[in-house]
Amino acid sequence: MMVPYLDLTQSYQNIHGELKTAFKRVLRSGWVILGREVKEFEEQYAQFSTVSYCAGVGNGLDALILSLKALCVGPGDEVIVPSNTYIATLVAVSRVGAKPVLAEPKKETYNIDPKEIEKVITKKTKAIIPVHLFGQACQMDKIMAIAKKHHLFVVEDNAQSHGATFKNKITGSFGDINGTSFYPGKNLGAIGDAGAVTTNSKKLYESVILLRNYGEVKKYVNTVVGFNSRLDELQAALLQVRLKHVWQYTAKKQAIAEIYLKELTGVGDLVLPHTETYATNVYHVFPVRTKKRNELQKFLNRKGIKTLIHYPIPPHLQDAYKDLGFSKGSFPISEELADTSLSLPIFPEMTKQQVYAVIAEIKHFYKGQ
Ligand SMILES: *Cc1c(COP(=O)(O)O)cnc(C)c1O
Image (cartoon, rainbow, N blue to C red; front, side, top):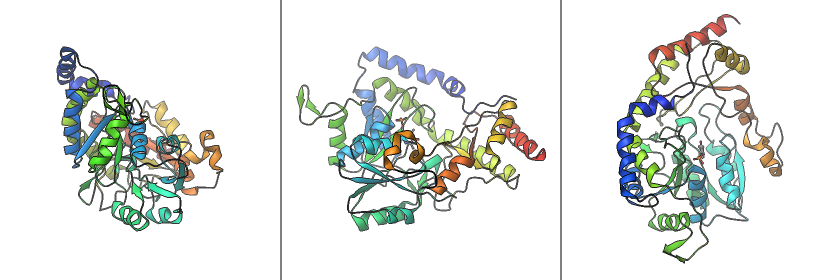
């Protein structure tokens, strides 16, 4: 049986009528940049995130860059980020001229370890970017307490955890200002690039609104050197449709995760995802770990089952970050995760047969070992 890693075709097909209606609405309006659709999506996403303000922007990277800019983080500043994140988190820090400082995750949750954050705080530290990786919320009570104690800003990177909660509070509502991505493969995905900033601060919100549109306070009047990072009307209209379905998508992914967890416990040397009792997990990714990662991936691929590796090279070993001066062994936990993790297919449209086919082939792999 063929099992893709993700099937966007099916996802779009299931809501084809609604997407078409939204598309037509934008075509009919003749207004395609910064209009009613963006405003409405922003209101809906602010409500979803239980915050006062949301600003739609071009993508997730820009959401983080504009958040840091709004906080006046820049050259000479240090920003603490997890050592096992997607590179965008570090790039955002670099792009505002600050220095990313890495802290190791907890192996069990893949999320930044609050104890490791405290170890790397210096006089130059300005902010922490916790990343709710793979769908599980970070330990936000501890992280917020550390930030308060050391007078640091918190910018959540919520690109992978739309709808996840920590002690019943939704991610993207904890930090001073937070960034998220609606990259098509994310739990809440646009049909192209898109992102958003969420905050309870009117001042920070207004700053992002200014920065995303050339620093323009009114037409052809510019008060700061800004960016062009606008969420467009079409994506905003399509995102309103996707947002209506996001809890249903989440529930379906969680149901698949439950089956994987039940059926794969004790199989071979697999280490399954662990969700802390304080958190909910929206399973953007379902990572398993095994010493036989590459063999298992090849085996499943031969059987028509597609998997991914999140992420094969940790940021500190990327050529792009040579300048940070790290080498193999600098962040052993992140390196181990990179060497042993394999992400199984998980998407709302996945059929029960597909889920059980993945399970059967994994068992089959270990029987042959
Ligand atoms: C996807 C992602 C981003 C960046 O989002 P884009 O919309 O692709 O720019 C940032 N951080 C994390 C953790 C992500 O997964």
